[in-house]
Image 1: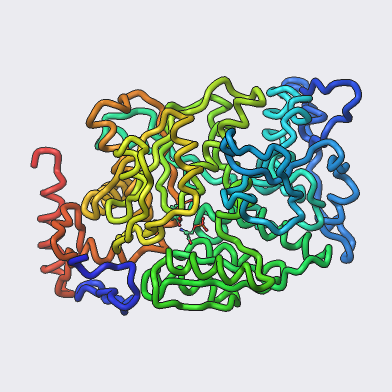
Image 2 (image 1 turned 90 degrees about the vertical axis):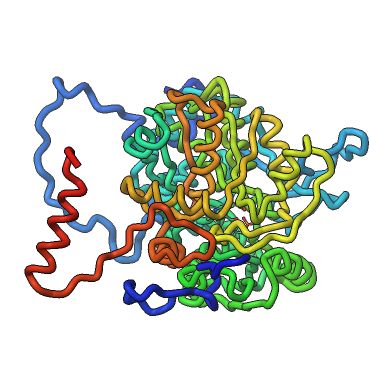
Length: 533
Ligand SMILES: Cc1ncc(COP(=O)(O)O)c(C=O)c1O
Ligand SMILES: N[C@@H](CCOP(=O)(O)O)C(=O)O
């Protein structure tokens, strides 16, 4: 790449003016009711009939040797006998179908016998014993509470995620329940849209959507270790976000974590996260695809559990973001959901979440999915453009969207399946397009990451071509917190990026510290902003 890319710690540049150092249930009679927390089992009377409540002076209610896990153990009935899930080959080829192949989730297995991907298959017949309204009400009743583990947006859907795990084994930071932001000004000003939303999955414990999957994976590892299974540590290859999430959840459970990072290809903020959380960090002179290759070899030799999304457990957590979007729209289905794609697990996770909601009667359709890639790392886009002919991995070039600098995505088959079954589209974004989109979005009050800039570029292109209509309800998935990628914003607003106009740069103005100089620049500024200017 021609310019000095901010995502490389070695190449981070600093502008002179930024004085910043570099860088109601209807159960069948024989099934007991799954647990509703109090609020929904005993709905309150309408406000007109309510008596004024005495103000309670709250005192600590728990004795010192008790906590919310103990409370959950006492209060939450166990439904492990009602619902179950297992690993099965992902979308097996019917011609060599080995229909009996399945594995318990307590086994350590990442690939099917044929070498293909696995999927977590739920006992849909058991889940169907309850109707769509039942599930909607159950999930809604758990939002915003602190009841263990349902205070988490992931574990509030526990029956659909890891139904058999003991609540006591769950490792959670009450992740999920991320805000769905109405992008009023951005939609109106730049796209003429009135129903545009940004799902802020990056406003999360470690600043990315990876928390949703990692709580599930690390919880299962916690369970396996209690069962004395041979898991000494958990490892991943990462472009920065998976390693941050893995190290935080492992640290919280006291489990060793090992992370393989491509040297000088992730942001400083992302590098600091596993270091601070006590992970064993290997910085390797290769790219993400090289790291991925190595971690797969290592985890097949050593008792290190693989935490990348090749491991289908992760996607069970990530799919809850799709369910959450429906929930936040009062179970109305948006027209479009746009997701930036790299290793390509997340686009399938979204598909799976939406599909389960349809299959189980919570909604009657699913949205169309768009996967957005950086043009510098676009193997899925090329595959889509070729009419889904033979897939070819690419050598991924540097991109400001550094977390998706991936040329050989492990979940390519899952992504293709998700897109084909959702009438989906793949788009790409050049470096200039994604940085401009990020800057424009930020100028309307967001503070997004470059990957979200990739997704917004896809939206801009699909709006311009008329594929996405002005009134289409559209959700752009924001995958990481912008604060992890400040160097890219500094580079852009400094206009220090080679071959990039940085059209929306807003550099600070250096002014002499005297009244006249300050008044002078302010008057010129106010004039430029006045309506008659
Ligand atoms: C911030 C960010 N956005 C998007 C992605 C892409 O997700 P996936 O790899 O599941 O396609 C990743 C990781 O790959 C990421 O870290
Ligand atoms: N962006 C990811 C790349 C690895 O993806 P994964 O979902 O397979 O773990 C990261 O942050 O490492």
